[in-house]
Amino acid sequence: SGRRRLVDLFQPARATRPLFELFLAVTRPGGKLRRILRTAWCLVRHGGWRVLLAPGEVIEAQAVIVAAPAFAAAEILAGLDAPLAGALEEIPYASSATISLAYRRADIQAPLDGYGYLIPRSSGSDLLACTWTSQKWAGRAPAGIVLLRVYAGRFGRRPILDEDDATLLELARGELADTLDIQSPPVLSRIYRWERGMPQYNLGHLDRLAAIERRLEALPGLFLAGAAYRGVGIPDCIHSGDRAARAAAAACGEPDARLIKIH
Image 1 (cartoon, one colour):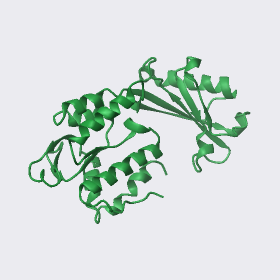
Image 2 (cartoon, helix red, strand yellow):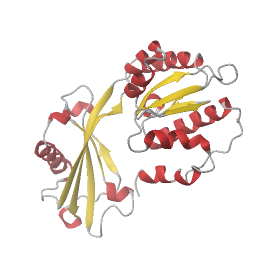
Image 3 (tube, helix red, strand yellow):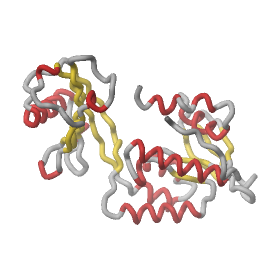
Image 4 (cartoon, one colour):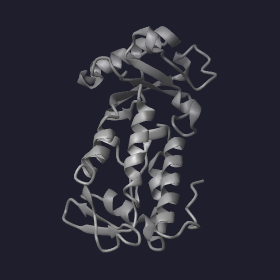
């Protein structure tokens, strides 16, 4: 019931909608993308593309959407357009970790009448926020149990992924003790690490986006999508993908193509 559902929704469309063939080819096991090259066989009409996959497979397409992180997109596109790759490489990323902790509801005195809280930079903490996961989504914890998730890794501070699990767990428990007065040990804890998982929109980001868009204007049929550009949340990424898919459909001569809606 997590993000895998977004991928599963596209699977039935494979047989009838070739638009998704590239997506499935690149994301299947062993299908690592190496680079994208312009082809000559349909430059006149649509500016076609040849996509090279790591096992040696080649996919030819009228339009390509690169939905990789900016640093990975830069590596893929470096041989095609060095200034475009350079602008993509300038988008910085922060690494982060999530610490999920489950507690008996009886061990938490705080009302938990919201969905969590943010921790400001002025606090000097390496922690960013705490989400009350079982309050936000059904089915995340059994009756009588509360699931909390603490986010660690603030851009510009110490590299949080260098810390071991015990240190991250102690950091999260200390935050929950100070803010929610939770003194009991959790009944379960899980730590997940995300290296370069969060793009940063720092000073000059809009100028970088403008430079990227100018380079793309000279590469018809090539589009970018993802969290690196205009929003990191899932709704933002869906909007980015929808916008890129519509532009790709138009580039293929199908501006009225019906796109699959996710419900």
